[in-house]
Image 1 (cartoon, rainbow, N blue to C red):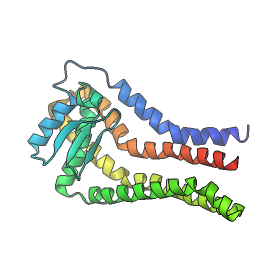
Image 2 (image 1 turned 120 degrees about the vertical axis):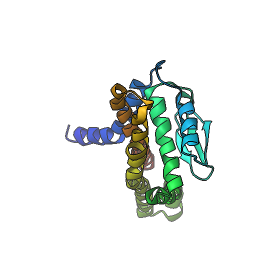
Image 3 (image 1 turned 180 degrees about the horizontal axis):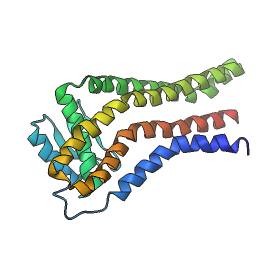
Length: 226
């Protein structure tokens, strides 16, 4: 029982944000015939309206992002083709990143460097965990395995920290860019609280994914202890 409570708290921390995000997106994802168009159509309109050097495309399921190198707003099929509060809010959030790019928003520009750094760290930590058994076989020193596990753990925690540092940029895209646009008449006043929920979920997506990835660390430790 003593160990069960901390374990439940850790699981809540790791999975809670992702479960909440999925709940919010699904709750406000039902088709709304009274809306002015789909998420993809709104993104196209906003790119023309703000004269952004960007394109919109339908990407893979479950992935919505703005690629500053290719200058592409990529929306998942459910949001590109969807006509719902979730679809239009997520599309506007990603266009918000394109607006940050156009403005050369300092936080956004640092965000891109942090993401690249996080990807390198994540690969390095995964490699450290994968080679742990080989290191032990070569050295026969138990501490060497512990060291590589620590390195892997630090790497994964660093990825979470990077995404936490990027959170203000995500909030800016949601609440300083997307929400004011939606309040201009793209959504009725009665729909705006739901849009705020979706935009909050969109801002937390990367942090939630990074937290969920920590479960991989637990799996590696369980494997290496056998």
